View 1 (cartoon, rainbow, N blue to C red):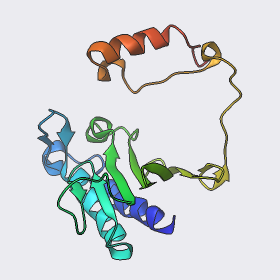
View 2: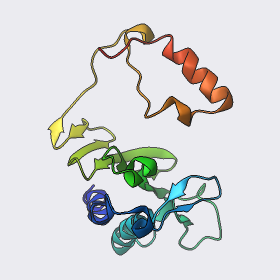
View 3: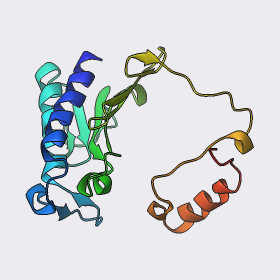
View 4: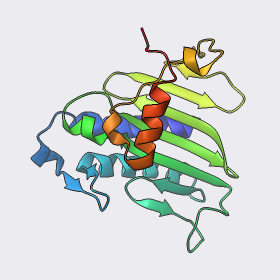
Length: 183
């Protein structure tokens, strides 16, 4: 957990440095899938990788911007026991438009099963930490979900319904008709 928290802290330091800079200063590019990426995404992921590799050089790291680092293997993460999964800026569109509604995601997977996850919002100073077998924490305080006995009494939120395409858009629209509005 200590290393995961340090990785999130390292990413936050980078993203705070670039937050609300001009798009030119962020060196905005489009990836192959047409999604945006900035120098902040790349530097933040590298900062997280540096932290993890310093403590655990033998662990596999799979990141949003640089793909997989596989110590001692040619390819594939399937046979790796421990895999770190990183997204330095989940919500790059929010980031580049100056909205603080993005987060850094850090997870650790053991033998195919997630055992640790962090959602860190460095601008808002909010952090969720989940560890297998332990209660989830929000800013170091124990949290839990509200009681919800059916889909119709549950809430649903997405950053934008436009993020869904094709059959997933239809599935999202259908799901929206089955849940309650959050008010």
